[in-house]
View 1 (cartoon, helix red, strand yellow):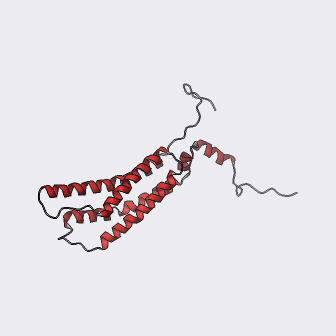
View 2 (tube, helix red, strand yellow):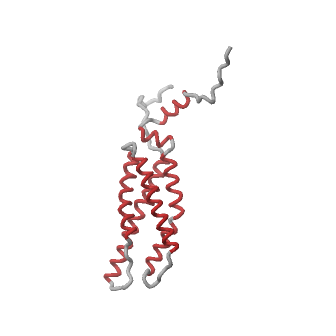
View 3 (cartoon, helix red, strand yellow):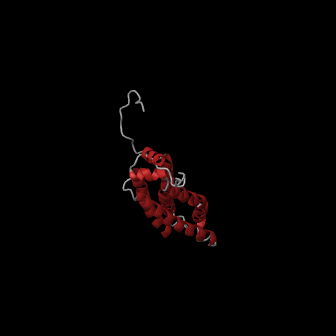
Length: 186
């Protein structure tokens, strides 16, 4: 193949696929940033209610604190997965995402089934309940997309640090056994 003018012969680079960046960004937003923002805003609302001597401020639930801590861990995992080192980070990220998704589904079912109490819950708690229910479509789609894409060939090649062009050339050179006609015996 002829070399383009102005370009030297350089080895194939390992590039991060766009789909991987989309999956990691969506995961970081839903599982990392959203829980941290939830705790921040509810805590801020509670502090504002205490300063103005308003009764019935919002309390940050134990689930929210735990989820915020896990959200920080997921942000760190997303950064490592975006960097691509260590290679096994994709397995850790998939496992943590699926565990957090199961916990969030439990929270959503619990919030949807529990009767609301306007005296003790207040407006902020009912808004948080609605927020949990609105997360349901994202909680279904983002883990599925992330798990699917992290197991695709471009992402596997990125984590193995093998250029995708080498993998494509391997596929072109190695025909599958079902595609080759059997030799006849003479």
